[in-house]
Length: 176
Image (cartoon, rainbow, N blue to C red; front, side, top):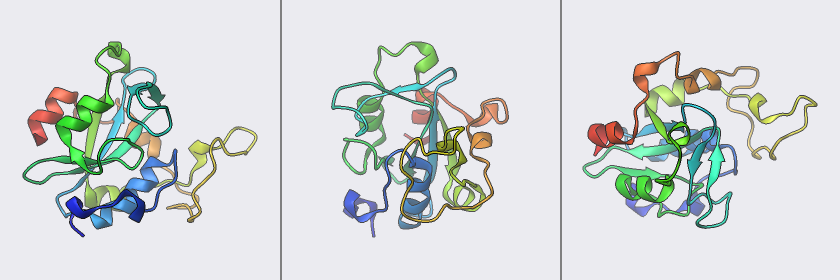
């Protein structure tokens, strides 16, 4: 299925489990696609146009993951966004990140090639449980990607791969 023909409702989606949503979405994307981690250097990244908040409201995510379609005109596929699915990289950046966000809450991006993300991401959902063992948000109806194995925090760490992270200008320069 070509990304231009994608319909958001045709894909597995569970709110608050973006890394798994992307893992399941990537097989439908072209070989040149990337998973795109998004986070802020300190604290939550401010985002708008996210379905977890009312339209026009800012939400702070500890991180978010979307699909970057690296075609002639780069596009973003975000199952959690009010933006078109997919939409242009420029539209996504403009609609998703408020310009008034203080520098510690502005987005940084880590692109990961589709095959690397699919083969190396490990998550058993432990990050979605409270100390008591109860769920912070209901889990997806499908089984965890890698029961008993988890490396999500390593993918999100700035200090482990500082050169892998880029700001919006660098992201546009690389993919736009």
